[in-house]
Image (cartoon, rainbow, N blue to C red):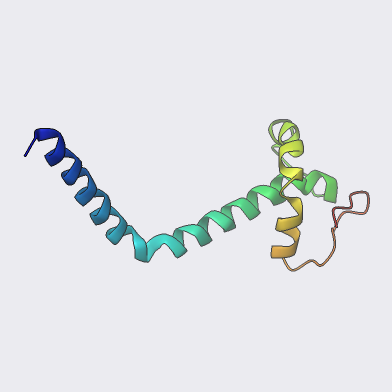
Length: 90
C-alpha cells in the first residue's frame, strides 16, 4: 500500500469523524446564523424604517447587497408584505 493511499484513507476517516461530530449541532448553528442575519438586516434597514442607526455610515453601502435578501427576511419575520412604504419586493 502506498503512502498516498494511506493519507487519503486517513483524510477520509477524519472527514467522517468530523461530520459525525458536527451533525447534531447543524440545526442549532443554522438557527443562530439566521438569527444573526435577521439582526443584521434590521440594522441595515433601520434607517429606512425611521429607527436611528448608530452604524449608518458603515451599513449604508451594504444596502444594495442586502436588497436581494430582503424578501426572505420579511417573510421569515412574519410580515406578508414589505414593511417599507417606498420599497416593494413582492
